[in-house]
Image 1 (cartoon, rainbow, N blue to C red):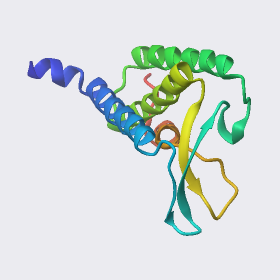
Image 2: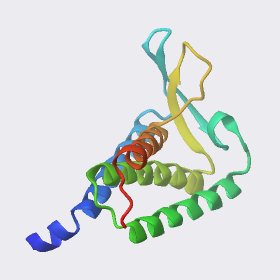
Image 3: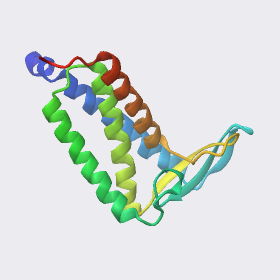
Image 4: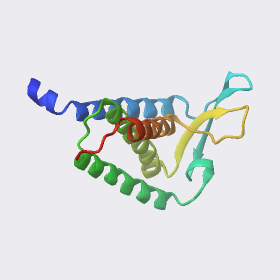
Length: 155
């Protein structure tokens, strides 16, 4: 058993981060549904909305195409992880976050026809977003850090 865990520890990290991130995303989307209130007046608020498009409401009402695109990206990420064989905690955490965010928004598009957003910065004109978007963004930044500063190509 220890050998199985040791040989697959990076996949276990991906799955653990994915499950935790997805659970938190789905829970917060339920908790903050139809809620509007200030967290920090003039800075941060909860403002529930549904977005049929992507960030900045790009491609609004193209939910079907966005869903297909998301599915293709998710399949590509799975194939990438199988071929790349993660061997870094940083890479595994970034992949877990990316999967959590992508699946969280994918599920909204499939089952609701739009993505539930509720986090709003009041001091700037910025799209309303959700925890899945945070996971995607942080995961992408960590993946860039990994690729730029940690990854060494095998010879």
